[in-house]
Length: 472
Ligand SMILES: Cc1cc2nc3c(=O)[nH]c(=O)nc-3n(C[C@H](O)[C@H](O)[C@H](O)COP(=O)(O)OP(=O)(O)OC[C@H]3O[C@@H](n4cnc5c(N)ncnc54)[C@H](O)[C@@H]3O)c2cc1C
Ligand code: SF4
Picture 1 (cartoon, helix red, strand yellow):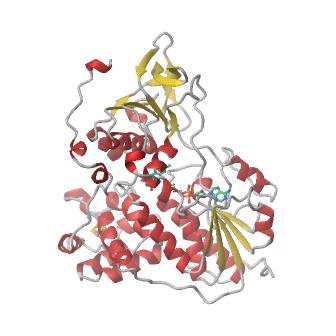
Picture 2: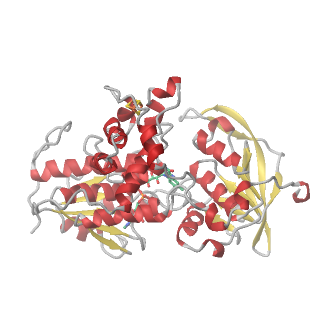
Picture 3: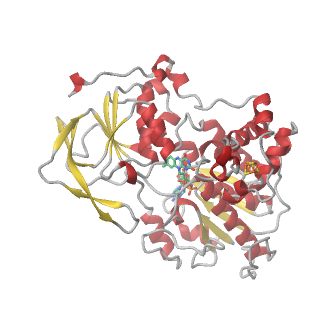
């Protein structure tokens, strides 16, 4: 099979390795930003703002760019979303603000994401501090996990005067923004600058500390007035097929993390790679592999193109990067010799009736097995739930949803234990998991913790009576 493969001309390979992993979209120049901002109609009802899960005042921040006030623009963004720099890069804007922009119908939507990045780059490069720690109110809050949900909650609480400690099991804070978003979409430095901003608000960041191992949940719950759980999800689950312990089978999240934390020329990759799973993680792994230099990268997915969970623009991006797709193909065995991968045995599938999610199920077609020769297999079939965290929280009365996520009241993100709140991927039992949704979860929980402990209502939120007194 390999000898029939004819490599196509691939533009990225004409660049150096470092250049291939630069941010994919260049920043807008001052002139480009002002010109683009001037296209905005500053709509009275601003559908773009409604479509943004954190409800950034988009017309106002764009107006400030048009009047050459990027600093004011950055403030408007950060007031609604402390992780505005990350969101400007990673948000699926086509599905959110830009998808709702009135200019979408007749012309081209306003480049809201790139304008937001323009303002945020300005603020980060000039190291402008917009907010400061609030006057201490005597309450202590622990935040478990420093991904976008945890950072947003911690930062908002620090602004309100809470004494916040954030516990993070990784060496660096930032969650998937630091370790999971491909580097040509978001450089690590952008995420770490947001972590620094939150620390400068007075949040104590304890990295390298796993809650449940290095410190117990009980110690944290007992010594704080409220706890926010933003632990995200875990590693990629096993596929449950023979041979998956062979050398050359790697977890997609580890593969991406390596490209964010290690020198690019030290990363091991195969020349013929099968990526299993056609979600956004699968696309990321496949495009990274191509940019590293892998000649043939095939995404194997058991359903059809219509059911694939990746965004359409991601799919088109992967095709442009020379990634091939094998739909209606189910891996059944990793084939190898001497413990090393040599191929992926697959079975053809047919499409059956729709399942509960509305997607048509893949039905095996026995006798259709074939082997795709490859020297590396990257698994990207979703993330495991953090069942150890769930079990530990159960002891405090925190309940799980029917499918194993942390159950919360959506108005407040409060769990069944009034002292414990949660947000981000660990509560997202339905709907799209995204950075911006996690940021909003953190904001909602911070407002609810404030109302619950300090007793001050927040706009658009029903008042919650204070139920706890400060831990002394
Ligand atoms: C490969 C990949 C690419 C993605 N790309 C995009 C994208 O382009 N756009 C987008 O909007 N979304 C994207 N997402 C989704 C987005 O990254 C997540 O929805 C978001 O990061 C969720 O935030 P979180 O804070 O809930 O969790 P996370 O970002 O996962 O952070 C959780 C943090 O908690 C820490 N933690 C866990 N357990 C413990 C413990 N016991 N003690 C201490 N710390 C703990 C973890 O180490 C981690 O740092 C992507 C996801 C993946 C996997
Ligand atoms: S919908 Fe489009 S044109 Fe209207 S305010 Fe938002 S960005 Fe501007």
